[in-house]
View 1 (cartoon, one colour):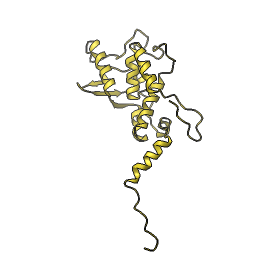
View 2 (cartoon, helix red, strand yellow):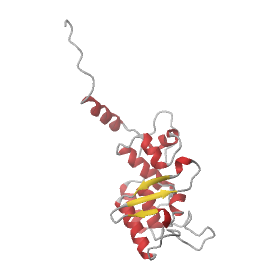
View 3 (cartoon, one colour):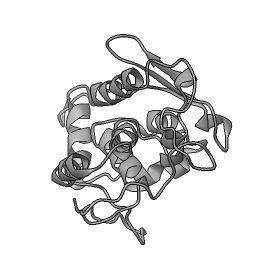
View 4 (cartoon, helix red, strand yellow):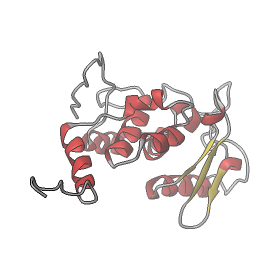
Length: 193
């Protein structure tokens, strides 16, 4: 997906087109597939998804919540709802691991004990896992999520950081004005009244 640069911008992070995401996720091996679904479905940082623990996953039978307990700032610690794809990936993984109440969601034999960056190799054009986060947050912004809510979802302490994910295109600006015209200014009086 090509997004035009706003005046003054020097670079634009990659946003996956829907077709690229679909091809990638089909080819992606486990456990990276589930991690990718979680990152793309929640906007979590890759490191947050890799280090998830069952103690912080709340599956309620139809959905659930993910509690992010670590981060650089207080804002990074947050609770995120699960979209259906994230719920299904976590529910399936939870059942496959014997329904544990604690431990890593993505355990490995690595020194840290859990999945780490660099494990999601496929034959598709490579990209950094962070692209999945950028795609998720950009899509939320395109769907009308305001920058303040987006900052809470992203775990940002400042909306200045969040603004990197908001790419208002000409059609989005036009839609915003169309929404306001319904409840906008009253018509001005005609001359001579």
